[in-house]
Length: 166
Image (tube, rainbow, N blue to C red; front, side, top):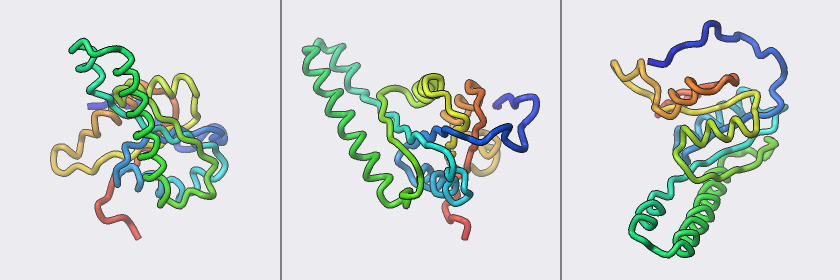
C-alpha cells in the first residue's frame, strides 16, 4: 500500500511552469497525455515527455565478454530506436499546442523517472496507470507506486479506461 502524504493539495500553490510526463508508449500513456491536455493542464507549462527504455541485452552482452565497443553500439542503436518509437507514439496525439520536448533514457523506469525528476525539478508529474479490478484496484502499478513514494512534486495519476470518457 502506498503511504499517503499527510495532506493532499486541493489547489496548486503556484502555476506549473514545468511538467514531467513519463510514458511507456502504451494506450494508457496516450490517454493520460490526452486527458491532461484536454483538462488544460499543459496550457501554460513546458512539458518534458520522458520515455525510459530497458536495454536488457547490454548486461548479458557485458557478462558474455562481448567487446565494449559492440555493447556501446547496441546501446546507441537502442536509444535511436527508442527515440523513433517515442516520436511515432506522440505523432497522433495532437500535442501541437503543447510546449513539449522529448527525453529518452536507458534504465529501470521507476529509478530513472525519479532521477530525471531530481535533475529537472518539475512542478508536476503526470502519469497514467493501468486500471485494476477487484482487490487489485487498491494497488497502483509498481512504477506509479514508486514514484508516489519517492517524489515530493505534485503528481497527477490518471487511471486508464479501456473505453475513454466521452
